[in-house]
Length: 95
Image: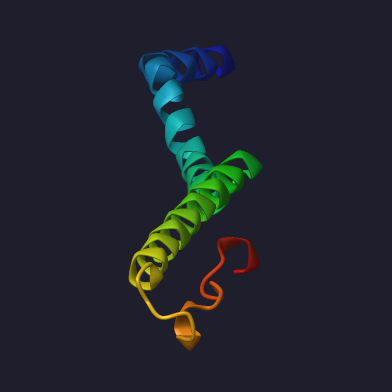
C-alpha cells in the first residue's frame, strides 16, 4: 500500500517537472528587478567622469562666448570705460 501511494504521488508530480523552471524564474524575478533598479539609481565612476566632463565643456563654451562678446563690445570702447578694463566675468574653472 505504501509503495502504491509513493508511486502514485511521484506519477502525479511528473508533469510538473517543466514547471520547476517557471517557478524558479518567478521566485528570482523580484531580486533581478531590485538589482536593475539599483543599477539605474546609482552612478558609476565612469558615468560621473563623463557627466563632469560634459558639464565643464558647457561651462567653457559659455565662458568663450562671454569673452568674445566682451572683446567685441570693448574693441572700440574708450580706454576709461570701467566695463572694458579687464575681463572679470564668468570663469568655468571657478564655478
